Length: 258
Image 1 (tube, rainbow, N blue to C red):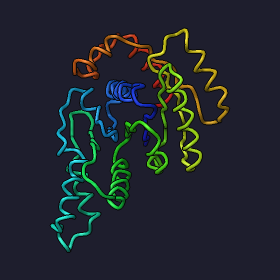
Image 2: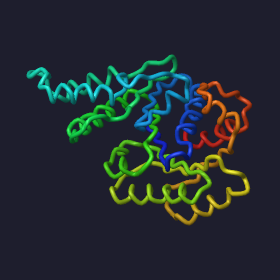
Image 3: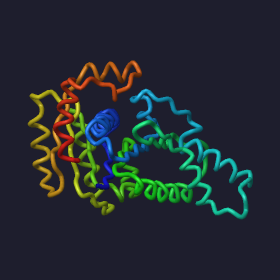
């Protein structure tokens, strides 16, 4: 089984939380899988949610800043292609944890256009993900990464929305942009996060009205004070108790993906 599962949606809808709940489910039920988690959000939230501290210099953004500085100062070896240097930096950024590996994209710094670096970097990450059974990708808020076709190898796209008009609007725009740039996904899942049960039918009708063959409603995860407390205090969401009601909801719906 080879899957690349990307979580997308408007900023603040709970993409990172949903991804980590899926990671928790995989670690507890599919412990023989090799798992890579890529945080491509410049805010780099995954490490915070799982209680890990990642310094900027250890992220890909930090490595790329060093590389940009060397390019500007003409300090790169003349006999080594830039793509090999970038590939080496990506592997140096790979954080090997006990049960999965983590790659933090980090923010970018400095001025100027580094389209070549970004292009090579994307190809390296595509190659890296082939070494894992499952890759979980936390996408940045917004639509730019879809317009650039950075989700081309994603098998399952999970669009997360909260109970807001803005969240549902972003969900629709992601679908539109994906069609416009001809991105193909095996499955597109809509996940309602922090939804009170009396509003579930609103999202169900929105998904039904899309009338797209490979777009399915994944399900709903209720708002949860215990999860909010862990996120606020810097705890490890992977340590969420098994009997947590929202985690129980998450487990039931994630079976559809895995």
